[in-house]
Amino acid sequence: MVPILGSQSVLTDFDLHLFNEGKHYALYDKFGAHCVTENGDSGVRFALWAPNARSVSVVGPFNAWDGRRHPMQSLGSSGVWVTFIAGLAAGAAYKFEIKVQSGALHLKSDPVGFAMELRPGNCSIVTDLSGYRWSDDAWMQARAHSDPLRQAICIYELHLGSWQHVAGREPPFLSWREASDRVIPYVKEHGFTHIELMGVAEHPLDASWGYQVVGYFAPTSRHGSPQDFMYFVDQCHQAGIGVLLDWVPAHFPKDAHGLATFDGTALYEHADPRQGEHRDWDTKIFNYGRHEVRNFLIGNALYWLEHYHVDGLRVDAVASMLYLDYSRVAGDWLPNRYGGRENLEAIEFLREFNTVAHGKYPGLLTIAEESTAFPGVTTPVHLGGLGFNFKWNMGWM
Image (cartoon, one colour):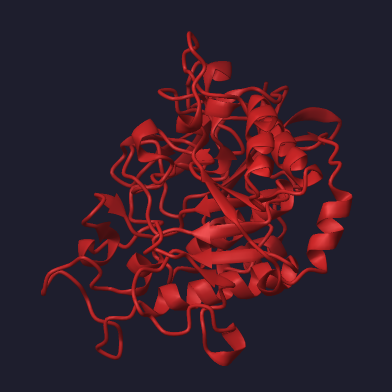
């Protein structure tokens, strides 16, 4: 297996321009690991954003974790690194070895990786998402012409990891295919119209219920493969049940293999702890003012809608995003440019998310878990609001 640098099919100049402007909404088609054929060679194409790295390599069992074997090529001021490894295939475990400015080496999971090892492992897994044959055309067409505000909605909130366990199995979790045989009849029997799934994206800690995400593009391996999750959604749709995901763009954990200090700098988060540290959860806060970070998050939302046919997103912890002084004492936060407490960058991010998502996917549901009296949460963006369909009833919870 040899790296082929300068691969023309990785990213065009226009791709890089869109990404750096925060507008490459299908970034999952270009970043991460993709099984392709280049110049007659089958292999895997890799692309990663790490603008402050001195060097980046792809490492894994296939090269004995030797960063000298498969270096990546820098695409200059874009901050993107690329390579193609001939002979590699779906199923290969990998990480990125990032040499930071101090010379230290950091091993990181792929931020746009489509699958990961079962915890406690944390390698990304090369995954081909193509090949699943959906059977929900009727549902998807009907959804595109629907108006959620004029339909009866009754949501069953489900954390599959704790809903049922299988005795004698370790780990004891149901697979998505097993869940389709148990969850769907239960939901239908009790009159629910939608299932809202917690903890779908990959996370290292079971006890977090999926609220400390590391693999934003990877369905957790606790319940099977990406195709298994596609099957679950497909079966729900064929049974007349919508599927919503709990989406966590408010914060991320500090695990060494994750997004925190990704290239040796505060890349996805703010450097100043008064902006970048979430005091309640000991996690990092996304820097919504950075184009590439907004692009990562909005692209992630669209990825679940596109590849997994989900019908909506419940956005977690919106209140913590909207206020710079959320759960902070005086002196532990920085006001916005007008001297106020509102996080203007997060507000613009949420408006862009709703504008783009609803524009691309008519009939989509977006729900804000927002625990304050912030005005205009469900007001359309063109009228000055955040653009959500609904606000989660925190009192009912």
